[in-house]
Image (cartoon, rainbow, N blue to C red; front, side, top):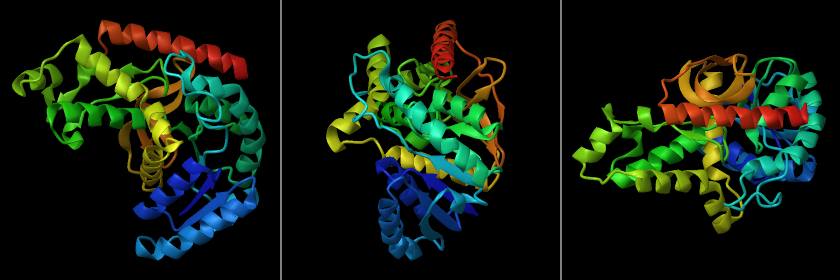
Amino acid sequence: MKIGIVGAGAVGAACAMATLMRGCASELVLVNRARDRARGMATDMGYGAPLSSTARVTEGDYSDLAGAALIMITAGVNEKSGGATDRSDPLGRLRLLDRNAEIYRKVIPPITTAAPDAVLLVVTDPPDPLAYLTRELAGHERVLSTGTLLDSLRFRVHLGRRLRVAPTAIEAQVLGEHGTSQIFHWSAARVGGVPLPDALEQFGVMQGDDVRTTIENEVRYANITIIEGIGASQYGIGMVCARIAEIVLRDERTVVPIGAYNSKLGVTLSLPGLVGRDGCLQALEPPLSNDEHAGLKKCIETLRKVQERIR
């Protein structure tokens, strides 16, 4: 199946590389405003592709997206160039919204014209309100935001480091916005099926608000830590996008925390979602503690305000 990537910056390149390495596409088309960059990237990756994939890598324009099953959209201003790298800024990634919304208003119509049946995966920050806008512009429901899947992986990694346990043995999710108002679903966290408080006690790890605050800050500002080191948060999200593409193309019907429009709440946000060939087929409503419920309510209010701003 064909996958398209619109935007050949650092994140687009990481998405393309991870997709090739997973081998989930037969054809990968790169579209970029500066076409020479997409051509160079496609040529370079194409030479190495036979080592892990039979995919054909090409560059093109919007019309070359025709027939794509999924299109990743990474075009836009990133956190560093957009001034969204201040840990004390409550807006966080939302500071990029107005500029990137204008870019999306230009790129989504030709994408949907070329590939009206494709699932659209919004990667650009802030992905949740941009996915809401994309849904409005595209006129269909096959729109996903990368949402909090990467945040949830970071949550599992940091918990694993505390417990000295492999992250694959940990069930832990971040819900809501891929941003500063996100909710850490501590009440449902498990280690090998054992509730987190019991696991902490059995592993001899002190628990308390300081542990939670430290881990939440490590996860919430992981992007800034990465940017301070290499200039762009790209590799983790690239791997996440490749995995989402795999889920969609294989119609896996896997449940992951992913951003999708919730008609009941009127916003695009991340909840555990059943994902398959047509995008998010159903969102599940997890049980929340009182504090988590209050936090999610504030998150929804935040997203509603920013969605109204770009309608």
